[in-house]
Image (cartoon, rainbow, N blue to C red; front, side, top):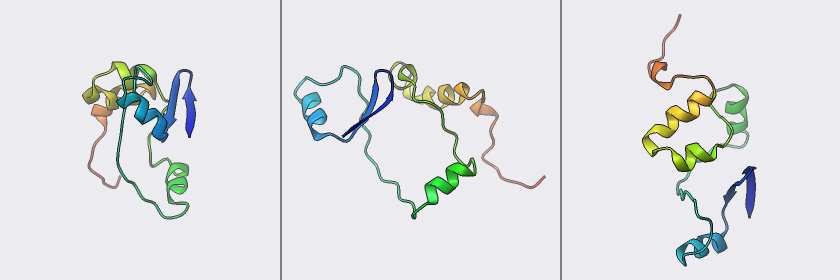
Length: 93
């Protein structure tokens, strides 16, 4: 199964695509990720509705033309955010 994210960009879980890449075919640009994240039913939707996540549109250049260590800053910049100005400390004002 593949899902179009934006023009020229898809997300897939297709074994056929993985096999094609392994055999020298498939897309020219790809990013393979493996991991696990688990939420209770409705938890992710609740977190998104409360703006607990920063999300931006998928961007080909950020994913494939930007160094991995610079991707977070580049994605945040799409939202007008300088990631270096965010604090990892919580507090009360």
